[in-house]
Image (cartoon, rainbow, N blue to C red; front, side, top):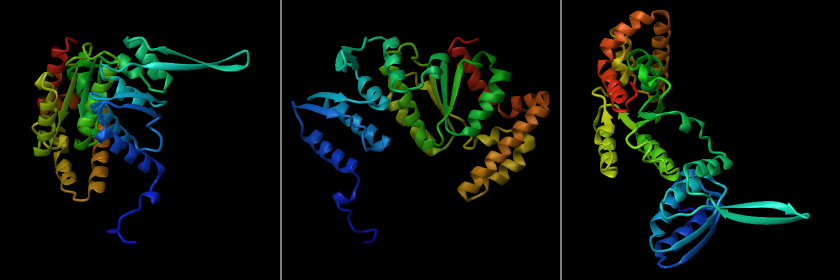
Length: 302
């Protein structure tokens, strides 16, 4: 067999056959009742999320009863306003296993508890007042450890910075956060308290415009870009010769390692010369600082 031959369905994992049959049924279904047991079994999480989106879409003309042990399934499906959540408990009554079922209260507290029962960690979600999704880890570290404490102290311990790990993951990070807010009925509490800030560039601009178009009711200023394509260009002038060398590296893995090493060098320099570093960053990263001050002001955290 070569790469151009087809792969028989029976050679694939059990989950592939199961999901394929379900997708076919979903595509043709109208006015049907679906009973689905643990759709998360034998399926990759990314594929599971796409399946759940299809189920939500088809729920407009069909009814679904779904059992699950997955917080992903629960969060994605129950963020739909027409969904209801039921919890099944089992206990032994006179040595006989006895099940009981009750509807989960439609409140943020009850919904947090049901997610926690399924292993979802919510301690961070309860602490932070506002969130900032960034494209890369270097920007996240510099902003969290240096710029916020020195130039936007009102955000310290109140703004959660998140590195998406690449421009192709930014939209997914935002949508996962937004669906969690919907599930917990906290979208009004966190309305406009999340920012997406990516590097300059055409690909980044497309991601930002796609988010703006999808979330038209959202404050459009919450989706924005830096002017520079590489965040390292906001490093102080004394590092710019090394920044230039790093950005000229063609191999992605080598460039990533070089960026990490340079970031460590900047961090060590900051620890040794905090006053000088603050003054240098105030000039080199003035654009970033202005954005942080705006977030601080708009979120009334000053």
